[in-house]
Length: 391
Ligand SMILES: Cc1ncc(COP(=O)(O)O)c(C=O)c1O
Image (cartoon, rainbow, N blue to C red):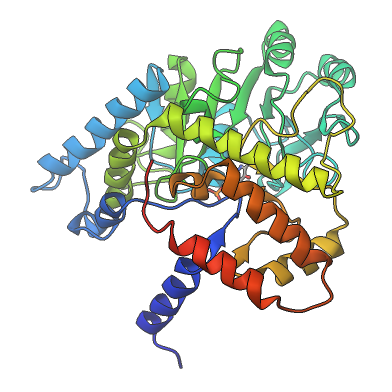
């Protein structure tokens, strides 16, 4: 049987030698990684235990840094993933049998395919225009007016355009509902002020992963300015003296320390701005090479992408074949051939190289050859020039 230490080394080699365009991933700094393997990884922070004074400080300092960066009054950094942050919001704000308005999963829609029914909540998919790759706002407002779900969650997994948060928030608030935004993908861009700011546009809560465009350790975060909602979320997600333990009894300290480091280390605006520029370089080049982009026909948006994702409109089967061909050339994308620019931006790639990678990708996927040695070589060389995090 394989030795895990050997497998880790093999994994590191594979990742080090490939250009990673996976939309859900990012790269962490050495400092943030070191925190994950520090002594904190097996410790508690509860005052009940001796020796926890400093770990308690790590939690409160990270919370304060997060509040300052997000500009919110309340933060919850306990969730161990984006999905866990979603569960905390859903458990805190709905009861069994309640409907939750959501962006429809997969195609068309691109919403996160969370299984509400397993937790006895009723999923209410909002009408979505495949052509525009956007919620059908008129039909969405009509549906919400009629169904009045207690909770509506906007934000998605497969997207390039901002969502109509303000219009939906106005309607949901008019009947006393709550609107939350799943920023699992867009969190780093929101912080960098280069994508829609859901709280500013009327959402009550922003939650999501801390490891996609937000280049931190795997985990989740929930921020809000609403004290009552924050307290309800605390009860379902954390140990509180009154209610005892719920989803998390002991927050994962190594992850929290790592998150605290990342909050400080990224030049957020510069990073997020370059992420979007790089996406546009990919989208424009792929489009010029004949690939239709999702939502291309919409007149509302002048660019193909406003975030870290580039979405060529491909048949599912084709996407998986392309993924495998690109993998043979040390380029990593997913089975929808979504292109993500968060990680390469941290590694210093700019538009000219993104344009060249797109040209190479287009040539690889249309070639009959399994491997084109000259292009594979060019990718390996380009990747070798980008081994350090520069922002
Ligand atoms: C919109 C959205 N929400 C939640 C999640 C779950 O995040 P995690 O993988 O951190 O549990 C994902 C995962 O990709 C996602 O795309």
